[in-house]
Length: 547
Image (tube, rainbow, N blue to C red):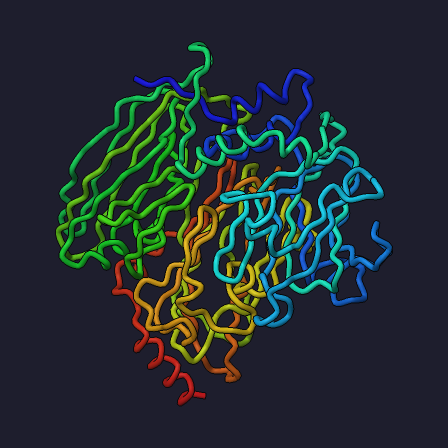
């Protein structure tokens, strides 16, 4: 058996015992999927600066202020934080106000109040992996660029652009906690350039989904032999696989489905995960993997769909004593599932250990007007929000990419002030503002992908059919200490008030055993045939007649 330990444990050794937190420990921590199974030793507040959401701004929330920069020219301040913190995510659409202008502004990142920036470069090149940060820590998906490299600062951070901002989102952590202060070493570009071997090793491990390293035996977790079984699911039946008992975690699930109506089987077979008597996973199998509405291979950091239709999940799922994975067949067809589930020994610590959750949200069709919020999940407790899938049915006449996504964390839930807010769901995933999605934007990356398996579209023709956006968080996972609420407000661009949209979502998060959350078990929608474009069009025609 192989002995292995997560990167998170290595990071803990680096930054505990009075040692400072630095770029190396933060990147090591971010590269480990299993870290979400434990609440962090050093708490922080998760924050965001985003276009359209800068408070107390007279410029429609696009920037904080203008000032003279280190070059003597005017700069637009788009993010500012004082004290200890870490930049975790920089995202922008890689054109400037229109798709033909792809040069982009210059970004400057000032650390610790210094007059000269630690980083000054072209914004688009930075987030597309064309500057000093390379893939997978900076990548373009469609028109959108994302940089996920953690950049720590000890006394503060300020980010500016040399042109008026267009669309951007910046995620960061603030470590200004009086209960347990930390020591933070600021990012240095010179030091970064000397760490090429270390960075390349982490990058290879992230791309290859490897988290193994050589460590002393007394600190190691034990990789156990995979549990391989073939399940024969008769119609309207359920099969349950029991996991080894004791302090453990499911580290990998591999599945292969055989069915006559393969696509419908992915919607009507429910994946159920129970951990210490808590049913934390209830989700149609295909929706969990983002392919309920069409097959398209992809390879992301925590899930993959292979060319032979095998499904692979690498979310780490800890438990204290008991765990089971069950499959419930809501269809009228006999289905075969080949399963392989890996478990590892993992200590369970009552004060800090967290469970994995996955919830499917499908309320059928929703009206485009009046504009309504759709709650994806709400929880009282502590944990991490780590990502979600969003699936939309496109008719070609309308695009569901407008609207907002709002995340309320801790005290902001009562204040009804979003901690995170993204204007335009299309912008938030990887779409072009004011344009309908097309095949050119259907791309796959480790942290953000757009799947358009069966849509009738070309590089320029709007999509007709289903599109699924898969987003998971790397260094930018959202930490909450007592409660969280995630809301989407999908809005069609149609001018009529009598139209329907079809949106579905799956949310992924970790939380403690004391958490109280809203559960979704929509067996009716899971059992019904997947809605077609024609059905949605007919529903819209009927809506017009009745109004």
